Length: 406
Length: 143
Image (cartoon, rainbow over the protein chains, first blue to last red):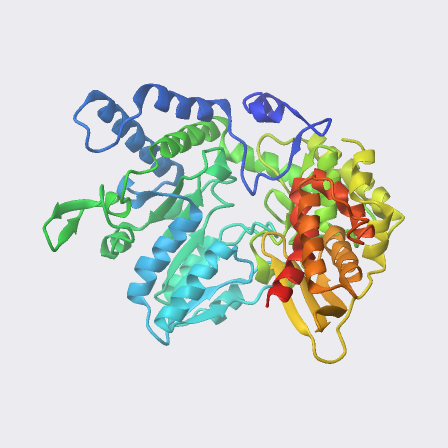
């Protein structure tokens, strides 16, 4: 895989920021978009824009074909059995909230348990807090190991016959931990629970096979995997989705409507009330085609090399703290001595380097790490070792800059 | 952008307030307490004000955050001590204007040291860091 050739496909990367060539190390927040995605969205609006599923006219048919074609592209990407199991949403947050609002509220009662981990992003935490409040179910945390991993042994001890839902992130957006979701799914199922996987940081970076993983729900966002913002996916096992009530009611999702009652369309459309995210879905389809052309395995391997290289280099900086396990996805979260991460990020920005600083939407995890905030560099297929070198130099400059004050 | 530009953000006086914060701690006796945080970045401040006859007798803060938010809190407490509440609110308004890049007569308002934060206006992402303590003060006075 030639990252430099790939970079050519991302026009945004070819610019100077504050007088330096841009180094974009914030792909875990949102990835950049390649030309084929920008072109697909552009072509849709220029040539095919129309509402889907109802127009008898030619544009309506073309828009519907493209929209449903994108659904099939997603189905193949995650190896779902059927497109009935692929629901387009606004993003990971909406996907998880759909499961929480529909499945969980209907199936959980007082005394039931929801099991999550301390490393969850707020989007896979607060929906479950709310479900617990409304249903009287108990929210239980699996303890985390010192290195920021979850042991299967602890998982086996925490998940009980009372557990109805296990909700866990595929990849931690702060620690980079890759959770053994397949094994955790098995533990959940042995106890009669369903497993909800937050795939926001998983799907963009590695092969996902929902059948092999045997997860019940898998949620992810388009914008973190080269697609547009505003589109995401909820995968759910057909049997569960069929039992679930829609969360949003209105146009597009109905079958028959009487004055006082209505019936729903079949899957997946019963969960897609209102005019769907047509351009976004088409853009996501183009993004998946782009990622497949490069090859997900190649992307994973490339990122792994970058993560290892980053760890190796950053470790040599005196006073740096790096959080998370040795084996990690393509991100490195750190603090530089007593320099507050916002201050570090500002100095790096002056050097043209974009990193994230803050609590990364994971406040309980910050508490667990005993820090108020951290800085994070995250990578994608378009990053190179040169980017890491620039980060390294930037961090040395940060130290130098704050050196006389601290 | 060079480090010279950074220097407009991180002036020596700011660093001094960050390293040696003034009025950090809690007020002895009864005080009005305001908690405020910046949910997007995790900075948080607890501000305590002791007000008698419409005059700020004492102001102290505790908190966690970057150099900009903490130095701003330190300078703010210094500036408003001994001031009438109206004057303190006027200072806060002037500070907001300063963050918008407007020229402010800090001498007239007796807040010259606060003017060292003027450079923050060139860093839009950091303005909220600088205004956190002032917002907390405004909230406290309004209560």
